Amino acid sequence: MMNTIDAGDSVAIAIVDAIQHGDLATLHRLLAEHPGLATCRIAAGDPGGSQRTLLHIVTDWPGHFPNGAETVKALVAAGAEVNARFVGAHRETPLHWAASCDDVAVLDALLDAGADIDAAGAVIGGGTPLADATAFKQWRVAHRLVERGARVTLSDAATLGLADRLEAMFAAEAAPDHEAIDGAFWCACHGGQRDAAEYLLERGADLNWLAPWEPMTPLDAAARGEYDELVAWLQARGARSAA
Image (cartoon, rainbow, N blue to C red; front, side, top):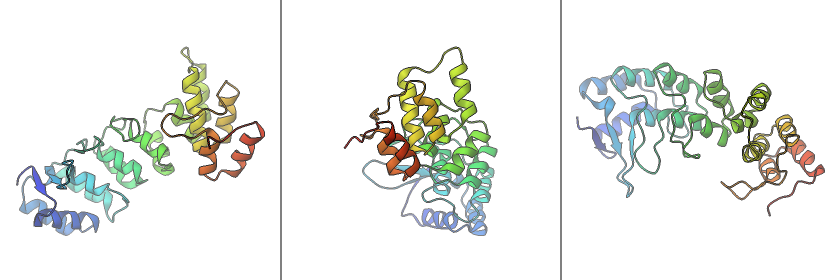
């Protein structure tokens, strides 16, 4: 079996179908019949030359495929590389994709198999799987990553409302700078975390800071999330929209 096969190849079609339908019997049969299949990449044939591994297929949007965790275990047992990178417009690992789909069961299976919890390369600022989870509001996975030991930034802590983490960061010898505080305040509003937002505003956050990644103020971020109480609190303090 070649390391890369075309998406239209009959074997590629069969293995993708088995993965997405949770057909473990067919999956095991195909892996046995085609040595090296677990390590192959499936080429989409697009102008960008994108390629996915089979573990990327397990974690592809919208995720939550039947028997997802068992599929991960079968592929890893057959030789799949748990930290393999997507080839194309970004370099995300399967764990990044599981995080973007809020698929806790598959996330746990990948971590149990040795996935790098802090792997860089996310579509969100080249960051970790936690960066994807918090940006896309995949809250179950975000908290699970924290539980399993993911590195937590000031912005992550603010987005998830982790008061103890925020306090510890400000108590550290190297306290957060103004830019980090402004970004974390925006993220607290993005996550609907009023307590975290209030804590950061008290420490000098810019109420109307404009995010460099999208033209939105903290008020805009809160309004987009339909966090009405937070919106009212921001407006009472003079927060403005970028519009």
